[in-house]
Length: 164
Image 1: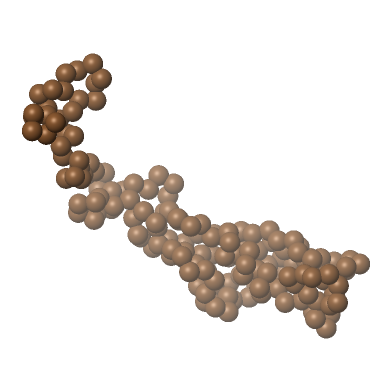
Image 2: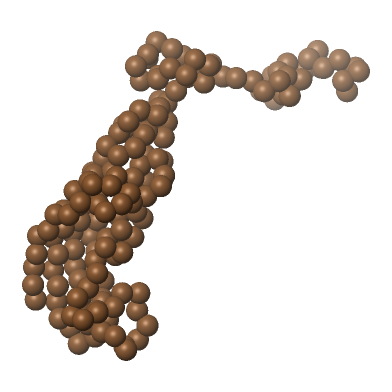
């Protein structure tokens, strides 16, 4: 068994969504390599930083990424495996990339209760709490505007005879 603490820079951008680990971002790894009968068992704790934009208000954000990995690298000729040992070496890059990219949020936010943008002005609602978001009514539904949500009310005045 061997344990290593390694920091390398991301060789390329990992991820394509609203946040990604940019090229050159340090990736900190605490790796444990164990020789087992079937191959080499790799256990790793990986930390790095993802950068991008908030999915609601579109400001720039950075957030930490932490991933725990455990994977068996099989000796060549053994059962089919996604990862193999080649000349007593294991290539951790594909494993780390896959784990980090899959851990990135699909809709990252700058804060859990980010109110987003005002649909009319495009201003950030977090910076302007006085702005009340207006409910925009689709004009196709305007004929229903006169109906009351109260089931006991008489809505006959709201609809003319031609519309019935």
